[in-house]
Picture (cartoon, rainbow over the protein chains, first blue to last red):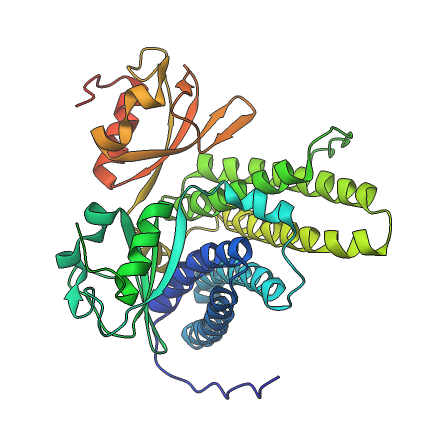
Length: 201
Length: 201
């Protein structure tokens, strides 16, 4: 175990923390199921990293709520926020539990794989290589949804996560792209990202 | 509190139970967030009903696993399934926690609503009225995805849930349809379901 980082107070609004917790927890579930389905350690590790982020956000959110509550009335209004945040945190924990199973190499039983295989839509994780045709292009310009039938749900740029990125967001070299789509589309995205193919049509 | 129903042993395979638990838990999260966003008690009640179903499935699944394990080696292979099932159950519990908040009328704080409002895609719950143009038509024939831009993710028919229904599945009068889509499409689906409009183009 590594030493837990000391959590410093950084200003983040309660709303931003909650929005991010909700978005991350949903993506984590997808990633965790995909990690289990494909016994993919990289995906499982992303989930555990995201769980740390969600824990941090939960801590900051609760700290902010306590600072905000001046009297019993305030507290009553705010306690519902804390409850919703704690539910998103539970979702994130559940995703992390699945990811841990993958990393423990317990071995995903064929039944688990069969149960998850029905997912028609697949999730891809792909690193954008410098030589990729995707590199330095905006998502709106790439229009991957209509061209190859995949939907970019998140981008990880180093330690930073962009959830539900805008049309104006460019894909940069070394970005990790998370996308959903049919198996064929997902396969094409992987090839485009690593530069094996340049054909976008 | 109502008396819990006595759970009888009914044959359901481990794989089917796990598949259903996974599918239901994912839909429950969507429903729970939407229930919180729109302070919608009906959606919240659906979530709690689904939680009972997931609990039942978890019980059946674990019972089956115990019956299947003959020796330590079996047990080791099967314990991973139990762990994944328990994680899907945690997701379902988290969704139920959010739904309970909505039903307790604690009042959803505006910050929660703002945090969830960014969801570009909306979830609709609509009952198909006998006079609706949707009634007695197959999903493939209706082709709601390309016509009005919504995706039917589940149908509840009485007590029965159809998750990710096939193209061949008809919508029947009094079915409860759950669909995802942009706000405009979702609004159109509601109108089509209750028979206010018949225009499908």
